[in-house]
Length: 106
Image (cartoon, rainbow, N blue to C red):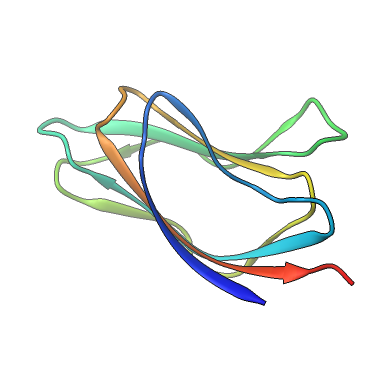
């Protein structure tokens, strides 16, 4: 098991984390912080390798100036091949802080 804390400067569409083969991730928390001088919106979703669908955790949530939104506060499990995406209304206006555990599948 490995734990990680990532801070990511976001562009317009970002794959924040991709789960490698033979692993699964436990996402413990995810925060989006507005570092801009105006309100910004963001969407957070998961894409699975065997599906064309997007599974939204939050869609077009407005984050006020100098505030943060806690998107994940309870464990979310990602399987191998899953990709966690964050879309923003304008690049480089939000920071993403992600806390997760990297676990072996077997």
